[in-house]
Amino acid sequence: MGVQDFAKLVRNVPDFPKPGIQFKDITPLLQHGPGLRAAIDDMVAATADLDWQVAVGIESRGFLFAAALAYATGRGVALVRKPGKLPADKVRLEYALEYGSDAIEIHADAVAPGQRVLIVDDVLATGGTARAASDLVTGIGGRVAGYVFLAELGFLNGRARLADATVRSLLVW
Ligand code: AMP
Image 1 (cartoon, rainbow, N blue to C red):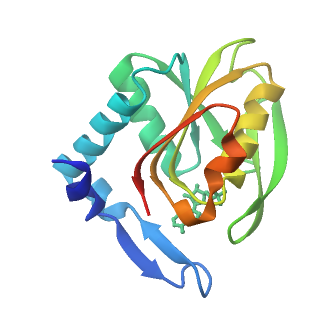
Image 2 (cartoon, protein in one colour):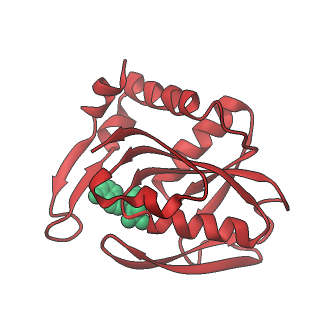
Image 3 (cartoon, rainbow, N blue to C red):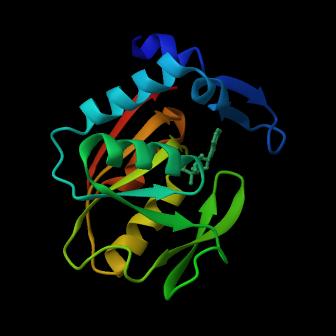
């Protein structure tokens, strides 16, 4: 199954969560065994040349792809979570979203000093979330080796905010 096939498994939901936003719903892809496998395999291939040691997944859909990438390549996964979820010593950052604003947190010891991180999420929109995740990682001493997304909303030019490292996405809309 190629990129064009699993692209068809992403559902467009108009006006969610707010009027004017076209939401890219990946749940049909997640439910489809061959589609999910193809997406993970393609993400592994798309990042094979990047020198990374730990995948950092962004809550919550980013966790799915970060864990799969980490498992497939024998690496670990660290979590960037919404506020109030992480139990131990943590760092928090506020940031702007395509629809509203939010905050994210990371455990202070999620990444070792100098460790090279691959930041993983399902959709790159404005880039605000990935930018914030990247800043959290560097704030606790990690280094960002790259970013990978299942899909990118190209018209929002989120990758312009991620110019500090290589950005890979399987689909561009
Ligand atoms: P952003 O910070 O604007 O790049 O937004 C990225 C985060 O919000 C990701 O975790 C996405 O899952 C989610 N997101 C933003 N816009 C959309 C969209 N149009 N469709 C699906 N997910 C989106």
